[in-house]
Image (cartoon, rainbow, N blue to C red; front, side, top):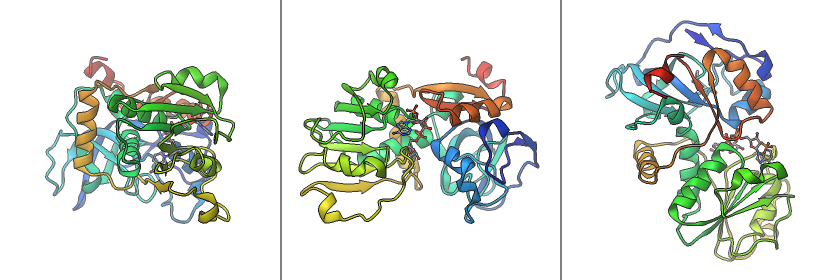
Length: 325
Ligand SMILES: NC(=O)c1ccc[n+]([C@@H]2O[C@H](COP(=O)([O-])OP(=O)(O)OC[C@H]3O[C@@H](n4cnc5c(N)ncnc54)[C@H](OP(=O)(O)O)[C@@H]3O)[C@@H](O)[C@H]2O)c1
């Protein structure tokens, strides 16, 4: 099968497809025929630096999520040909991921999906919507009467969070650090140019989804009303840890700080997400679609931040015809 195999720091323009054996199933793992996969900011982080860390298996096929069909169910309860989504649990880091025609994946990280969306559209959902869902509901306990600030709104996760929060009935304020991208936040009630210092400029913010990360976290805490919650989920700003964090000084009285890590998806939550998206007619925002043969162009576009929405890669060129899209 064809796959992307990384063993060192690799820019998008240097990506190549390699011929590798189709993996053999083993107990507890299933073989998935990858139909399409979404690309994630964390895969760019892996390719451009994290690959050198000792905890990354090398060489590694990257890709933390995919959608496809069960090619071999092994000892799982899945049926051959069943439509599934898979994500996280070490995928593309501790074991081979989805930038391949087939992926051998732990059955507990593979989930049945029932949806009429095309593979391209489906590929934009698993990791992005699971993380948006977990951050908004587990992290922030989001309710219709909340005013939600999404800091770093112009990423796939930000767009998904806007869609979900608007469907719930919230007032949504979303930020971008690029003035030219303000129109991309039109689905929010208010689009704000983020200069890193928003405290004191916004009113009524009860919940914050922090996607820029530690770089703006202190400021986000000070944007939040008493009783409000800040969920730190992203690291778009490139700073992952807080230096000399003094909680007494930095967390305002009565404001709560939490985070969300998408490593533990469940079938129950995936079902809730697909049901919510279906009920509200939400289509994920696909920023660009590539065929697997053009994975180099997809990774290059990712490196240069060229897609306004999720980048999805269709692994078999026939898929778009099969889906009638
Ligand atoms: N905690 C978790 O489990 C979890 C799960 C999934 C994702 N995440 C995190 O969530 C964030 C979004 O992920 P994603 O995959 O949705 O991203 P993505 O779609 O790959 O989006 C990346 C884009 O975000 C834009 N961006 C917006 N604000 C930015 C800022 N302040 N600084 C730099 N870039 C900014 C950049 O474009 P412009 O600069 O042109 O605006 C960049 O091209 C990432 O930090 C990712 O690591 C966390």
